[in-house]
Length: 238
Image (tube, rainbow, N blue to C red; front, side):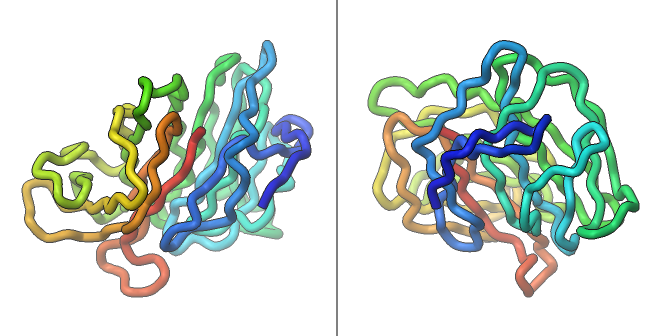
């Protein structure tokens, strides 16, 4: 899906800046060809709904409800312009006015951020991650790992067949730095609880292209067997 209209969280005319790989339990795919460069005084913000068991939500910024549609578990909303400075984020259930959680963050001009709605419903909270979208080295891609599984434990992320994990001991709500990786047409990623041999979840045949930047993220519950079960997803940040 290719959307070309300008997105601005202050006015809620939204423009996606990145794409999403349509792999496994993934979400609405938008074009990754449109890279929004923040103007002076403006930052860029992406939104992820990673709270298993939570209903469809509505996001408000500084008390004004956004026009983001279908903010359901597993949804990724691509980067959009937002004014620099302190911003108050809050969420409610769709068509409700009762605030479930809110948080204030200081956003810097020219920076990119991911606003993550995480944890189980009774503990739902925001996590804000700054995204370093500097270009990879020549002939490389960049990948990071974000652990958003409330009961998954401390996780290791590996590429299948490689003896050394890409990342180890990634705690819940933690995001690693982006690391250079060799591109591949069909890479398989898998997660394990730190030091344990059992593969908890995997995602197969992921296309990692040179020059691009990706987030591999763990979502869902290890104890679940339904649509909220532990799984991996891939976001193309740039």
